[in-house]
Image (cartoon, rainbow, N blue to C red):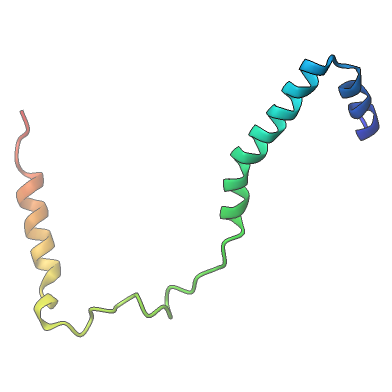
Length: 81
């Protein structure tokens, strides 16, 4: 169906149906606007981002991996009734 044929079909509808088509198009544009904008996000270079590794020089976090493992083992080994 060409655009002109589609438009002619739209014009052949009663006024109430035309309003419903317009409302539906507005709904679809709003719903898919988020998807379109998310795909247009800039690429982020995480390797060179200053946020990554920002706590690497903290001495109090030097053993954080062992601490996290301990917490996980403790929490995950509990039986939940």
